[in-house]
Image (tube, rainbow, N blue to C red; front, side):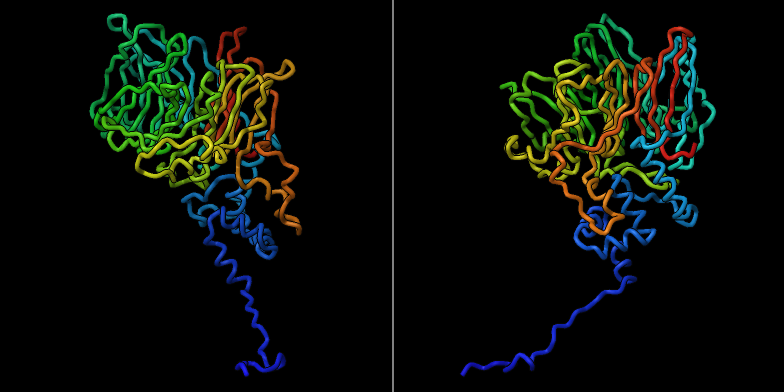
Amino acid sequence: MPHHRYPTAVARPRALYYRVSDDALISILEYLDPASLWNACKALTRIRRLVRDVSILRYRFELGLFGLKDGPLSHRRMPLSRRAHILTLYKHHWNMREPSKELTLTFNMPVVIGVAGRFIYEIQNHGVFNLLNLYELPSPRLIIAPTQPVPHQCPNIEQVSIDQVQNLLMSIHAYTVNKQIALKVHFRDMRTKGGHPKAFAPEYDVSTQVTGQLVKIESFICGSRAIITIEFVGGKLQHLLLNWHTFQARWLKDMHLHFLDERTLLGTNKGSDGIPFIAVYDLQDVMKMAIKAQLLLPAEWSTQKVGFARSSSPKWDTRIPSNALFSVAPEWNMLVLTTKSTPQGPGQKWCCVPESFFKSLPRKKSAPILWKEWNHICRPIMNITNHTFVLYGPFTMGSRVVYVDYHEKTQRLCTIDLSSFHPLEASIDTAKGQLDERHRKIGDFPETRRPISSRVEDVKVTEDNIVLILHDAQIGMKLCQVWTLGASR
């Protein structure tokens, strides 16, 4: 006769159910990252109720939904209720649910206007020297109000980049030597207005070895590395990769480049067979730059120009200002790939890839990764069709995309939310919880649009502002319309 520990059902002890108190569960939930908290809300009604009712959990959940993270500024200096109010306005202004606070700056022609970091810069030509005026943009997130221009007298320059964390102002001047385009790069300390102490020298001169007409210059700073991109007539691009601490430099001929962080760079190019690919470069040593991984793109893109959307997103190793209430979380940054046959107009295709995917690739170079092996990571943005007439953009900030299109004789500013957490946002205040996502097409992301002036000639995007640069030919002036995100009107 077999041995039974409990000979009858009546003798068996009842199952024990342990219930965690709300206070204990809240303490546990406070340690979760946004993705884990989001998944927990989808799984359990009780957790969803706690997140809805407990202010600190709701605040962190809303940050995660929008691809943000809490800043270093103490909650004692800025209470949770005030933070939540600024966050709500910030989200509504990004989604254009309500108009944001606007500021208009006017500049007499001729003048060069641009945006660098958290500044609008104005370059006035006075013949033997230039006057550079810097206007700091407002930021409720950093508790910064609009400031008066800070003038800098400098040699002739055409373009400026600013890294305020490093107090670095990098200015560029293009000139001709023996019919070849050359560059002079200046490195200044924004506090002392002298040479930057970490720069190898105050100036750096280099020749492009190219004869031709210059169209524009762009530059990007990422830690001790910088990229200067030169576009010539005919669409030819040339990139200078520079370590401004040591002045190690090299020219790159990739079609488009994108910093992930100070040590990782992405570049698009085409192989000998014409098939485009993305190369992941290791920048440990600029002079010995190595390809860490190579990802092939669709063969049908071989006749298109493949590039990256211009990004102002914080990089993975960017230091967050100490006075920030919250900031864009680099781990949720989205990289937007574009394919197009012309710089502007219809016939474009966009797709998005989480930057974290490239960070997780193996460190050692292996065989090229075939498109079929990673295309499930690259999601098409179906909001952009062959009939979408794109004028400016796309520009990315975190998990949001901004562009200007032309529709029915009207220019419109459009924003697309690529956040992975969006589907649950509408259901957090309901008992049901999960939304039925079967009716949402793959790649059909939430989008908002707003008509803008036909005089807009460029758009710039920062964490806290959308800047429209306009040219009014009738009065001979340039204007900057600044839409501040998170500011009360």
